[in-house]
Length: 179
Length: 178
Image (cartoon, rainbow over all chains, first blue to last red; front, side, top):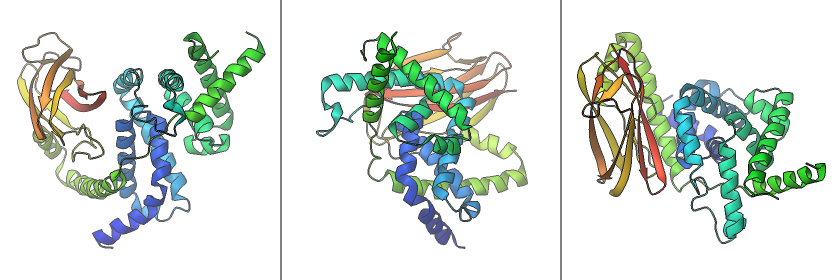
């Protein structure tokens, strides 16, 4: 297969899943630059596995799993970088910058402030807890889908979801964001 | 706390989470990511072959000259940011490492913070682990020479964090000491 044919085959396999992958990258990282880096690194890795990728029945699910593993590996290897990420997440508006549009619920100032507080609270969760709560409660993934994505037993996923919600409740109640 | 209160709070949190915003990718980002993936993927495949044949010494030599780069203005991405570059320096010997910051536009009043790993000092800043200063970037590539000195036989990751208008990127460089 020529390089051009190889590139075309790769694009046909991955492009249909770009929106889903980008959303996942955003939910995992919570920051634009990191989401783009993660998305990019996934594509580079997937291109290197093209021979395997063409054999896979559900490349979208496979790509999501690889992305999740890349994210977790990266966080484990560069714990120091994660500390920076937490600081970034605690900056006012980080992750929400430029998002409220004319039809957005966040147009309302109070709602925007609540969402900013939510962003800060989410940044205080562990990577695993933040991922579970965002995938389940924001993106609507089923528990079984999170199990498949993360390779974590569904019981552990449930436990993480429960703890993540409890921690969010503590933080948001303490600062008056929720009643 | 009463269960009713907890349920009410959970409901409020769920509603917030459902509204938690999610921006679309910038126009052109997917296309650029795809081009970069095929280019970088091919390069890595070639590099794997080269390293197998000629040993890691080649990589170490190249890393001295091309340590990486970054763009503040996503979605464009630089050529060398995917892999973490590294340099090897000798104990007590000053070594200048050139960092390249590529910016699509000129940036005024950017803040650059360099965080050093254990055992590494920046020449002129003895004993400081973190050095921050304000700088400006020209459009295109901006060279930042950092003269590093290994004062102990340990190394780690050097972080160079560039911030401008609430946006930031962190560049990592592995520093090994022999």
